[in-house]
Image (cartoon, rainbow over the protein chains, first blue to last red):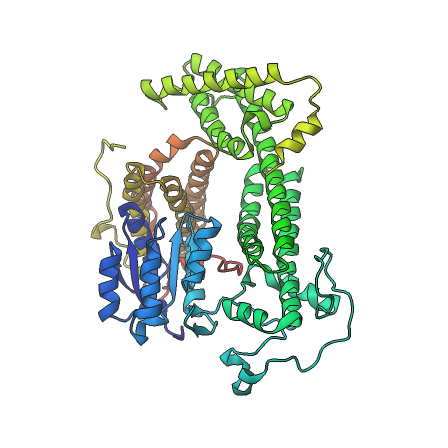
Length: 436
Length: 158
């Protein structure tokens, strides 16, 4: 469908089974200017509606994967008029499997919570303007998952945009002069006749590429059928994804370690690259599961990226604990006028960090310095609670629970600090902490 | 969260005679019931929903104020400076509350809905009424509020 019409003329089917989310999303959809919205509270009703109505856009919102059934129904079984309808998924989830399954079922795009009007408008326009070819194969129906035309692709040209004669082209017409692959990543042992390319070209591809470099099944089949040259092109493309993931890791760490960055600005600056990194990791993980000659290499790279992710989590935690200790200490010392509810504020903040600590392997995996900070913060929570600083925020039951949790955590931290062998150097613990 | 006072709603007597501005005003009034509904829910995505409402509120403030100010500037409205000052003061207040919430004071969000409804009611009755008849459907930007915001940077679908 061509999106030349104003949004107020667009008809949209919106499906959401949760009342609060549905009410919010309905307003957001209205605010971006979509004029004709049909709401469905469940997928059965949505299926009935797509049987008899045409829509320009379908938006599903939720956190389950039950929408996949509707999406597959639309892509594989529905009428011609509805089959290619752009389908947006609004979700608070960003885990890889969720994204990949949506993508492989033919999703047009994801809109992740928390929402903004700007994002919603951008994603709606992108879905309606989606320039990607619509693929109809027995194994996949949906917008092509290949977002970019690679200059160094030598496999069969099977896209409609490749032209009528391209269907027959199964061998490269010309190969550039041989040279070493211009990527810094060490390649695994294997065929040495990888298609070469200039470093400039690869850098350009890298700069443009970001997340849009999803591999599609059509290419996968071509790789298997056409031997080492296509395999090599495939490898190089995947290696670029790995390289981009490492670049993002470095970028995120730079933001985290920026001495001039406030926590708020860091948070907003990290959000996009962090999400992009998660998506690239999903790709690298998938490459490792391919059971081909390169899969071990990508498994290894995936582990390395995971290690780096642990470093990022550790950095996030380190900064957060330091700030929380500083703030809670000021409240304990009466150096701030806003200490009412201080026990609860500190407790809430620590609840977030406890989740991060859990990901890193719990208290035993923290450095002694961090563990000491944790101990001091929990002591401050109890001190502030003792003063009645949680007044007005928690009722009696919740306050009792807060005190109980704080006491338990404090004892855990104290116990580990006491038992930690003196010989256990900081570096060794840090190393352990950064294991995935 | 139980509200002791009945929620304020947009009514016809609050109309300023400009459809797009009336629609913006109605959007402000919808924040309170939306927040109340979310705060009372046990939805697993509750915090994401609250955060979404706060994001959208910030955009309402930015987009709506811009719409009004641009239109008032275009007609050389004499009270523009005072109007802008009132907008800025409220925008600052909203931003401070949102910042407080994001720094961990979760309870503060409960006061946000009534604050917005109260402010918008008083602002319409005292300030916006001053341009009644001067701003019309013809001289005010009709586009959805989001279109008035800065153009977002391009990003990626996945």
